[in-house]
View 1 (tube, rainbow, N blue to C red):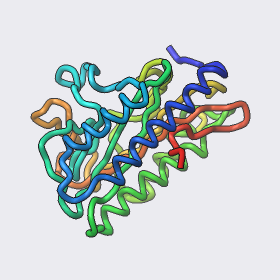
View 2: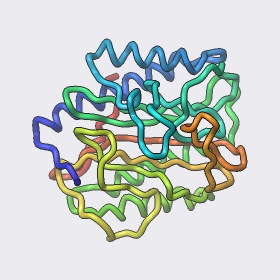
View 3: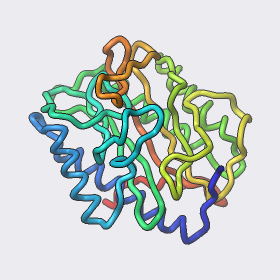
View 4: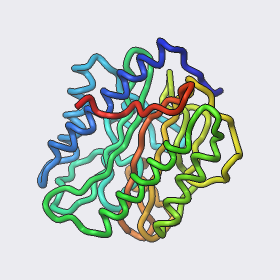
Length: 257
């Protein structure tokens, strides 16, 4: 089922989106060399609860995971790219960290992810990886709108990622979002322009380009959740929740300041 939000629900989605973005950017500012991933999870829980919001992750138990996720944010380091389970790990200088967060507020969910380098060491190849996902995300958003088709977004994302020299894994991509975190339609990170579902005003989509530096193959970590590159190479992931409007597209997961 594809959910179309009304004006009241869209107003609530804007509040949720800002909250998600504010939490992510606060966590990014606090994350330093020596910060433990479990500290980031604890900060996230405190900010979600202070806002009167609800985690989309704690009780999340899809078919591809091992039981309930049990934490409040995904923390993926270096070769981990998706669903990084917070654990007892201190960040080192030069680590590539991805924070992925989904929260529900007033009955509407929003989802966003950011990748960045911790500390003073900023490896050029890691920065290029992050930039590729950000550029692909911007291209996907620019291709969206009330007269576009789903394939237009996927084609725009894939064109940027392939153009930067990366291969694309098709197992996971973006998705519809609204009263629940994961909904139809699936938003692949590669596709054909002019194909697929025609976007409608009121539709919320989480667009999320992610890549691995030298492979498109994933391995599942022993924790049953964390997905890593098969070669141990570094990875990056960028995501926004957007709303299709009558005259374009609106990014909901931008910070309030």
